Every structure is written in structure tokens, then in C-alpha cells.
Image 1: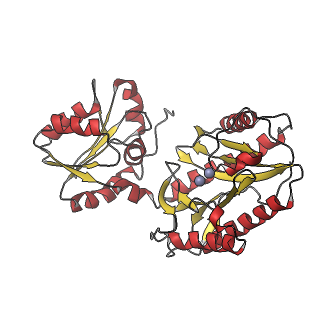
Image 2: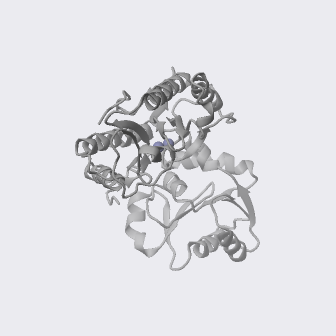
Length: 364
Ligand code: ZN
Ligand code: ZN
């Protein structure tokens, strides 16, 4: 939590860009209770907040714990609710004579919806989907700078953690070392639970670290991300601990080639599916396409998974300023798995790989 006065430039512009999309839904008022959207529209970083936007007003609702922080971080009018936020929101809907309210159908719980219906009688509730997320997809210069800092810190944390790697370590030990390094380097925290998997467990794409020794002559897969200034980074590296057999080395070669082909396909105007296809085509050449069981990547920003998803059927066209991950992987049950993941930003000419960590097959 930072209690310094924030730079508010851009917040009003974001809200201004949102309003025409709200109007398209035949309503003038919009409510978000989703914290990443609250942060994006108001600057507020607390754990309980709602933002109400009309053409005339931008109101941030929070509870007494955040009274000081809210007015420092946000350029919105701040209203402190003594009880549930939606109660206070409803009062203001009446006061502002709001007759129709757009709300986020995928972000509000059934209970909150019932509450809102009860409290804001007479207000027509319009379910909307992904309006703020759509704005968040293309990052500003400032956002890209923050994501770059997050990515660089993440790579520095891995480098430091691997310097302290010893053969006696367990997966949990190494994950803890990584998290500690992130914190010491100035991260807000991790962007998601650090994945460390060794040996055949590398075949589980989202393995949780266990109290198991990191095995010699096996693969070691690390998937980690920091949160810096609220923005996520995301990187996977697969290393060898000692000598691994030819089958695993071939797997690594295939995934690296696939990852480079996908990065090569990234440029404004191409569909997310085309990037995914570039990764799959290479793996097909190795007869490994069936072992690639997830999508090629995802957008990231205030959240670790944002639009677009780089999947087989994703028709979204890439735009300059999108930040996405490229992370093909190949997994064989009982044997092991390889995934290589970088964060890249789409540029006018193609993309820039933000992740500075090398991708040669490292033997620890
Ligand atoms: Zn990822
Ligand atoms: Zn990842």
C-alpha cells in the first residue's frame, strides 16, 4: 500500500473512454465492484471498493478503513459506507435520479445482484460484459513501463534464487526462495502461486510445489510472476538438473522452436488464433501436437489472465500495446514436461520480448 499522492493523469481519460460504451447499452450509469476495474478507473488499490460512473460524476465507495488512502489514491469523489457498499451505492443512485444502471454480469455475485435489486428498487439493472476489460486490453505507455519493471524484477528474482540452488532443496524450498527474492527486490508480492515442479511432476502444467526433493537427472519447471505497482509478470523456464535423457532434450528443442515461431507470428492485425497455430504447427512437425494441452498464451496486466486468450479459436486481432504471454508446452505423463514462457508487448512492427532471461537449455 502506498500512501503517497498518486499521479491521477489518465484516470479521467479512462472513464471518459468508458462512457460511450455504457451509453450503447442504453444506460448512463455504470457500476463496477471488481477490484482490478475499480483500480483501473479510480486508482484505488484497497480490498473493498466500488465505482459508480455517470456522465457528470465519478464516485468511489469504500469503507472507513480506507478513508485516507482512498482520497490520496483516487481523483474520484470518495464516499465512505458504514455498512455494505451496495447500500451506500443505492442511496446515491436515488440521489442522482439514476433510472438505469449497467453492472458487470460476470463480476457480481448472485447475492450482490439480489441485494442491488432489493436496495435499488425502480432502477433498471442492465447486465454488461467486459466493458472495462476491453479498455484494459491495450496498455498505455505508463502501463507498459510498469509491466516491464515487473517482468525485469521477476527475471532478477529467478536468477538470484537459482544462485542459491542446492541439490538438497525441495520444490517448496525453491518456491519459497523465489518468493523471498521477489519481495526483497521490491515486488508487491507474487502475481500467482509460484509453480516449482521436478521430474515426472513437470508433466502437470499447474503443479503445486511439494515437500519433495528436486530430483537429479530430471527436468525442473518453474512458472513464476511478480506483482509490481499492481501489474503482473509471468515467466516459465524449464531447466535440467544434471544430465537428462535424449527424449527430454528433444522435447525442449521442440518447445523452444515452437515458442520462437509463435513470437515471430506476433504483430498487429494477426488473430490470436494465428499465433496459437504457429506454435502448434512446429509441435506437429515433432509429432507432439497432442501433448500441447493448453492455449499458447494470454493477456496480462492488472490481472494475471486478461484478454486476449491466444487459443485455437480466438479471433481477436492483436493490437499495438497489448501485453501477452507466449507459452507453449509439451507434457508426457510419467515422463515429464517442458514449458517456456515469455511476456511480450505487441509493437507496430511485431513484438518486443520483455523477458530478459535466456532460453538456452540450462543444466543446474
Ligand atoms: Zn502464463
Ligand atoms: Zn506462467
